[in-house]
Amino acid sequence: MVHTEYLWFTTKQRQEFVRITDHVRAIVSRSGIRDGMALVSAMHITSGVYVNDWEDGLIHDFQVWLEKLAPAGQPYRHHQTGEDNADAHLKRTLMGHQVLVPITNGDLDLGPWEQIFYAEFDGQRRKRVIIKVIGDK
Amino acid sequence: MVHTEYLWFTTKQRQEFVRITDHVRAIVSRSGIRDGMALVSAMHITSGVYVNDWEDGLIHDFQVWLEKLAPAGQPYRHHQTGEDNADAHLKRTLMGHQVLVPITNGDLDLGPWEQIFYAEFDGQRRKRVIIKVIGDK
Amino acid sequence: MVHTEYLWFTTKQRQEFVRITDHVRAIVSRSGIRDGMALVSAMHITSGVYVNDWEDGLIHDFQVWLEKLAPAGQPYRHHQTGEDNADAHLKRTLMGHQVLVPITNGDLDLGPWEQIFYAEFDGQRRKRVIIKVIGDK
Image 1 (cartoon, one colour):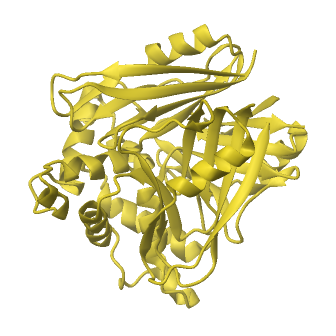
Image 2 (tube, helix red, strand yellow; image 1 turned 45 degrees about the vertical axis):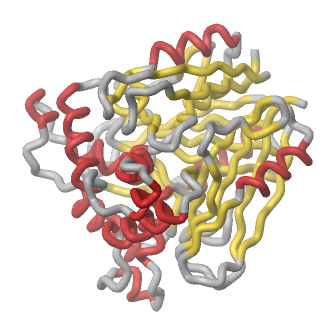
């Protein structure tokens, strides 16, 4: 059994991390699937999806760290096409662009501190995430 | 058809990589699933799961490399909460926190050198990995 | 329902990124699965699979960036075994070694710029990728 929904985001900031655990949980509930997994996957190549802590300090640390490992404002060759977002492609690669969330007894089977985040690196426009739930009713 | 088990780890070292290929293979065998995939996913946000070589030198190289890209002992903002493990969150992000292992003819369908590892970055306490097998009998 | 195929690659260069979106689409079509997901996973531990832009400048940027974060020619301990490819293991870890592609209405459900790539970091010999499609007809 397979159930599909999409989430749309238009972030206010160019770079912004949005907690989406509750959205994914609601979709799993609507699917009626009791045992299986939910794929949560960014459909744009300058955003990601990851699982980690819901703590503002750590989210700040992630963003500082990504800027160090994959800085904006470098002479990327991609920018010769008129784009200015090569760093966003690299940052989303470091964070990952999809997660597979286990489902047990009709709910997300997450550890004590696991939260699902949408990581936007080139926002301020409409972008989409697909959620595909697969498993048994 | 879906089958779920959990593995528990209490590592002796704070950082330790543990080969779990045989544990995953045994769970797949118990599931009775002959064709499908097994999700192997850390349930804590300071540990990961990855596939790579079972060679001590390379494991050492991974650990030296992670320390360079995501060093401990920095003034991370996360530490203002009383935590001291921000680097563990970053390191597990680089290694990945889950893999999906293909299953064919009732066994893991791995390449010649693929081994599954649990990567602990803040251990010495009980932590858990979920294995969820999905597919056909 | 599960369908499995393998893709073989022998790249001309040691490091080479190969677009495989159309190969994956053809396999999904042959599977007859209309709703589900396709696992695309490297079976060797010095190559990866990732989703990103089909733009030569960006592919160049990725390769320069990987060389900076995971350089070749360092005194890696792995090389004491006679190997010389420790950097390939690190680079494939940064790019990821597998993706799960959603399938809707019998086709890949990709965003406007998503393309699937095979990333070879130690090529010039035969290496394999597994594609496993799971879902409903």
